[in-house]
Image 1 (cartoon, rainbow, N blue to C red):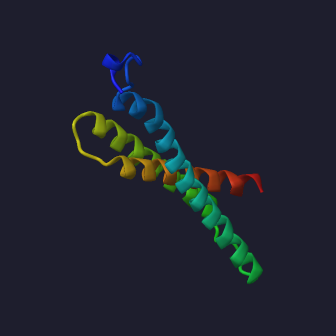
Image 2: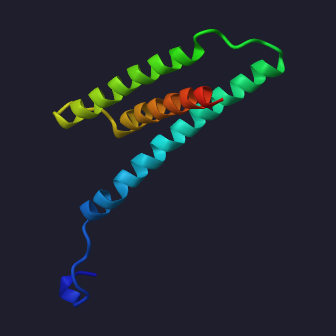
Length: 111
């Protein structure tokens, strides 16, 4: 179908990319974050069921890892806008890892 058929303009692929690409990136990042946070929680439950103590400084280590991942994700995102070729998947995974580590750290602090 085209404009000549009288049906009106056909949306271009760039329209769909501009609408759905941010949603897909968000879903991928949140998915990675949920998996990472779930693995951290599962690891802690497994250790406590064996009667093992928590490693001292665990929460601080998670905070440092979160900060380093945040810096890396922001740098990669900025470099991608300046002509560097970083895949969208790589950037989404970095944001997901950052969010997952941050959520795991907050969960440790709340408990």
